[in-house]
Length: 190
Ligand SMILES: [Zn+2]
Image: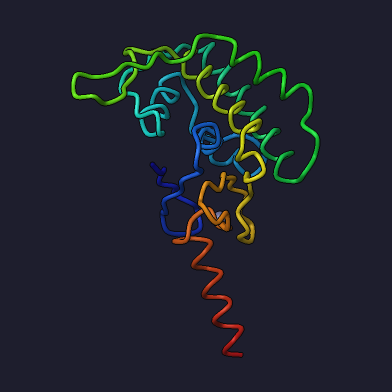
């Protein structure tokens, strides 16, 4: 599962942050990502739920849920940034995530052909709770120390490295990985 990003300075590329809550960061947010805001109206939250690894077709969303989703996202940026830079998480961010996680999440169902799906239509609140629970799983789980920021210059994308060797450095090989290779090659030629 990966999102297609469209940076202003170049070619579109695919980015898989590795888990749901980090995928939510890509919807926009703080710092450099304020420019990439995609959540302008309640329906945008439903659109994100459709293109994310949730793959939800039907989500009913309200203006209040949009506000709460963005507040959760700000807290997640805080937690992820603190984790990446080895800082202690801020209590306000922890509280915000715990509060969001306390609401009922999406309800899983099994389809007749044995696949996993979710009860539809879902609500924005359920999406928010599910993202928040995913964040608790991530930041308290076995991969908490594998949350990283892309090693590319001027790239602040955050992912969790779930690969077996644990050597993932780039948001995407197509983008930052390739740029690095090209630069390394050029400096060898010089
Ligand atoms: Zn990158």
